[in-house]
Length: 243
Image 1 (tube, rainbow, N blue to C red):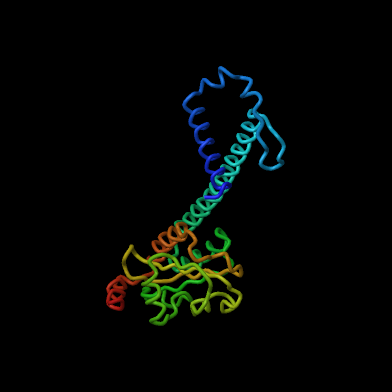
Image 2 (tube, rainbow, N blue to C red):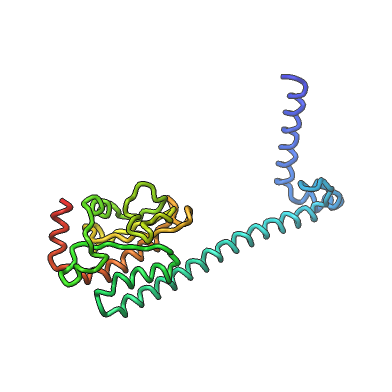
């Protein structure tokens, strides 16, 4: 060990002994108030010498500022969640007020655009009753789309990539840079009877790994509303196609 190393080790030992003594003897500063009053500590930012009292006040202000920043961030998140909840309520209300089942698909899509500010939205449903087979949203889809919907137990969010379902969007989805896909189901763990596709020109609007809580709530509400269009035997047919 070099002399420098030995000196550093001795300094660390002395520091530890001093700290241990002061912690074990809080009355030291009561007996020697001139020591406490004379302490000067360097400001970590300016290097200016501060009294212990000034240094403690400065640290307290910094901690308070950090707490205020965190509180402000939580308040922003809370306001955003409140706004989304209000949008979800208005969306649900419009669906409940839609008496004509044939108008339900357009009501769902309009809600996506108006209440959730999604510029591009499309949906397809299958297994509909005969009166609704002429709806644009009931046109036939390929087997791959049905398999994709069945596999979507949570909404997909991310870049458009290779998904051909973006062609359902306006302008064949050429403007979409990110997308979300939401499967429609009568109940959890049952085969899907439809698929909602949302698109955005912003590549970060729908990101991989983003929270999907509200999208899942939208899926539940939209599924319950759109299930009015299904044929009574659609459930059995879907079970057979998924097997």
